Image (tube, rainbow, N blue to C red):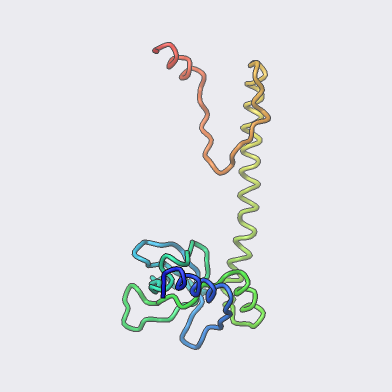
Length: 172
């Protein structure tokens, strides 16, 4: 089987098939990827361990932090204690929630995560508005008006003092 055909079948399997976890399998959330096709995962109870990605998924399916997986336990593993069996996307998650297979620990975390960004976003908006106000006060004396510029709230805002920029210009 060619690589393209293999990729097509693997992607179709992941996107179209709906699976339910068996007795041994667990639903986990991805916390990060330390490398070598290993992923740090956490169960709904808070237990953290490493899960390996099987070769059929490598270079075909990408997993990022916050995704949910179904894993098969590895009995002899100390650090790597599971192998990824299936990757759960939004449709899969909704179906598992309707059927009652979704762990209740992940439902609580989702509501916390949904509420938390709103609060932090409001804080950054107030900080951004304070920065804009201070900039508009300074820009009143300047001929250029920078108050309409977009403020990226995802980046740390460093204020440049006018003294440093003027002294740098004099040295050249």
